[in-house]
Length: 203
Image: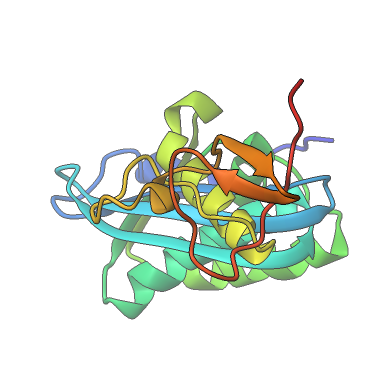
């Protein structure tokens, strides 16, 4: 349940509405398939002009959505602090995360309390910090990174819109094939030796 924000917290975030001349923007997302289930986060970091400066992602194992969302936030904060940046704006599609960091919601979950504390420690190293909520449709690249991390952790072929090398197997996950003498022969591409596949029969 929400609770009233302290005056100090309100002043902190209202004072940070106007960013300094130079700052980073981190689009952060985290997810778990099954919640809890295989989880990961993705973060896209840009400068104030919208130029991409970093892309972060990691598979987190069996965790919850909220755990993954917090890990994405912490990854963005750790990147900014480690690189000596003093100003960071975080954009997340987790309304819960944003409201907990702003102090609007309490953090009741024990695991999230530790992550919340770590995030607050990192924020204290910054001279300016802002966090805001957007709908998932406006956070697509971070969402793709998070899903790619989950795919990799689960042993699946990474999703990719295109392959610079032109190798069809790197850019696609579905192939057409036919069974001949008990073996599946691909009709439109090649896969590296040892690739694990799942067969879906179409009649």
